[in-house]
Length: 388
Image (cartoon, rainbow, N blue to C red; front, side, top):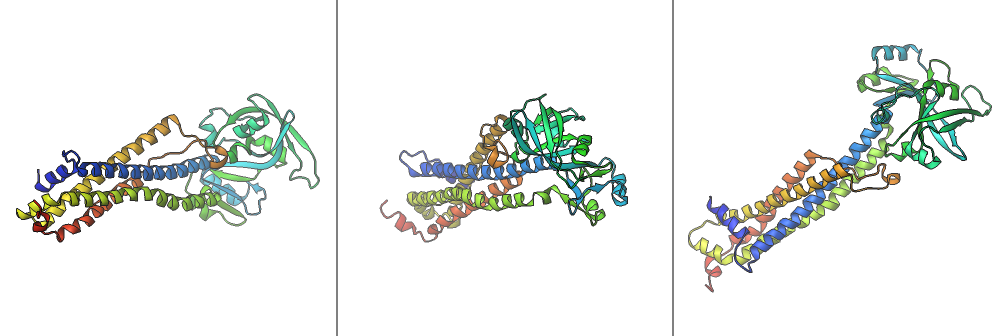
């Protein structure tokens, strides 16, 4: 074993009773481990929140949507749209959107109805059935609020249609076929799905007329190039741009706040190395008197600081991974869905960020351990051994 490494480990785990070296080293390791755990969990929550939100929005809204720039109906027999659909078979799904009142017994609430022939991925992933005419799929939030259960009959009431400028009441009874739970209150409380034919009947759409087209799969850039006025193509990221801007805005303050905890661990390393050098000044003086080079002695304490950083990072990373795995498996930590768009704290393994955190920590540990060793440069063996 190299001379510097052997002495570094001896100073790190000093067997002397009452010695400060071992206690200071383990204190620094513990402080650094806590800081690394906090920082890695913060990174995993931020990444998990963005990942869960993205997956849910994509599963409901599709990759993108083609709509009229003024919100008018779209004619599927239009030459440009027909050519686009034919050139991208199975890539588009038409939909009809409208607002109406849903009634169940004495309870009523507003709901956004979406008529379609193919259910979105968010619904088909949890329920393998199909929707037929006369059936409706409601969100869990809306069903709970109106006390609706599977098989119940609800009534959709439309106050006006696109075919008439005068207000006319139009009521249609529907049977609840499925109740979905996305964890996004925006969808669970306000969105319902019906068959395309029912939506056409409710909102007065003629044949070949729809509210828009949902892109299920395909090249976004090519769709952008083919769509022109009066139509526009909006991706799901553009549709929810403000939400993702908010996530980016929250990222750095969170990193800085929890990074300060890791910084405390680095300060502990600085203090530990400085105190160990002070405690071992007599041994350092003996080594220098026997011809040991000052740079070699500095290397001893830098190895010690690096070892503290390595062990602290390993323990912190291990604790973080354990907490993430427990949360992913058992969903222990719950949060109010009305505020956070989901009902549990989302954890996700963000390995690139984890790697940056660990690598940065090791580099900073070496710097924190190098700084106190500057005092060795001015140390005089005779002074260190004066009272020996």
